[in-house]
Amino acid sequence: MDVIFELMKMNKVKLWVLFGLLVNSQFQGICSVPSDKVVHVEESILPAEQPKNEAGQGRSISPESLELYREILHMDSVLFNAFNAQDLEQMKNTFSTDLEFYHDKGGLTDYNQTIANFKSLFEKNLTTGLRRDLDISSVEVYSIKDFGALEVGMHKFCHVENGKEDCGTFKFIHLWHKTDGVWRLTRVVSYDH
Image 1 (cartoon, rainbow, N blue to C red):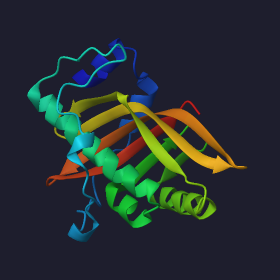
Image 2 (spheres, rainbow, N blue to C red; image 1 turned 90 degrees about the vertical axis):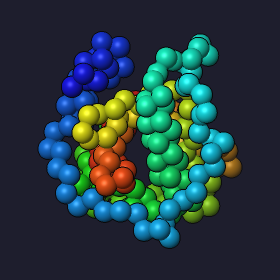
Image 3 (cartoon, helix red, strand yellow; image 1 turned 45 degrees about the vertical axis):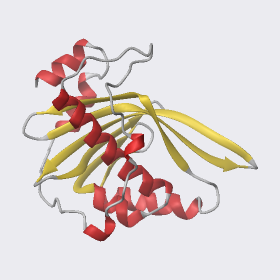
Image 4 (spheres, rainbow, N blue to C red; image 1 turned 30 degrees about the vertical axis):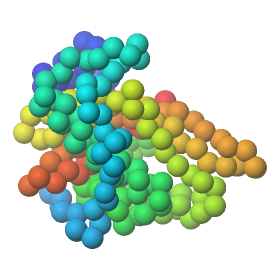
């Protein structure tokens, strides 16, 4: 709970969003990623040093927190490398089967609805160059004791429409759960569309 109060004091996340993430958290149905589905992520994309804020100043965080930050950035890249490659099977392996996906325009969807939505999105964007780019400077990661981690940040989605690149930058909150050494995304809040 300390992390929730810290986030509220920092005015980064509103209480209703955090409450929505944590309501009805059931940790069943979490499976491991098959070894043939593990995506190698270049270590060069992960920060070797303390993350920096918008002013370019380093945030003072512990080595344990830095390791968690690196783990969550790795999992973020696994998920969105799969998104950018339109690899629905890898995305399925990254989501928990009890996923709740909150979208400010689309409402609440569960695991099956979310997978169906991504399948439809990919079918409509086979040749549009649909991609997601993370704003690494916006990412904040907070430990959730005996559960996992909260990732907060901004990302940009782009695709080509009518011969012109169309992009939008949006905010997100991801709640990651770690069981038996395996991370799964259990809650997503996508907002500011």
